[in-house]
Image (cartoon, rainbow, N blue to C red; front, side, top):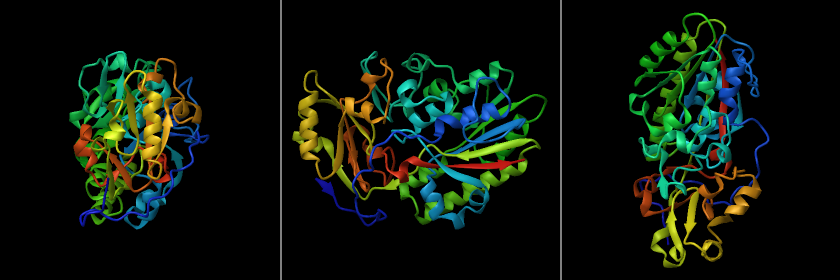
Length: 382
């Protein structure tokens, strides 16, 4: 059953029909790092987002900042909203591991293979949760393609990642963002100091700065809340200080991995025997569920989920996910996608005991709605 809203949860708009599913034709997050590499003159890259020529390129990624949320709270982000900005698309699912892998490799999820917040690895016979990934399975086995940072370093650029120490040796970093030097930074001041060091010296530089705090606040309190707007102000101050620290002949692009929607309603999947019949495991996340069926049961599971969730979610078979363009997967990636993919209406989270903590969060993302998939692409110059 669907739980009603609680007093602590901020109300969202009434649930609406899922967004029509189409493959993006504009630049995406997969074009951000490749455009930055092109802007500093590295061969083999194309500047699809229009950064122009520079000696130093900086990518500042504010986790969880959707374009729609930024416009709604423009008064709290004077630096970001005064920049040269527009919206681009993230990838599907609109979730951190998938989007950061696209940023880091310049590839869409069907090529880099990180297809969700959790997904089945058939070659390892296990579910992988990239945000909680250590050294097993080996990151290069899961994602073997060269990253933009590795390629840029080989072409002579000075490459630096600036992010918290906790992420230095994570499986996700090693799979999606490997290459160059890693400088640990916790506070805004640490990042400013690291930017100054990263952009000194001769030759082109490519620098990536990650800020996780807005996403955490959005998950806990909800996008648009007082707490979230305060966190947005902190992210805006970060962008301003980084921009002020840029040397001449620099360009910085501020972007994100996904937006966020508030989900005051929850449907508990594994409390419904009808939904669980024939299901081997559930992965993904509350806004984009991968459902893996017992061998030979995929069509029956798809039919039951479509019947039982007809008024709640769009249900797609694996083939439909590929044919729709949501995940155009290479042959070796296809089986990582669920036999069934469930996309709930806005305002609803499909919760599960497999990720009970994240299922309980107010702010969610992963789905194809504009609030989740439209992200900022804001340019600032030194």
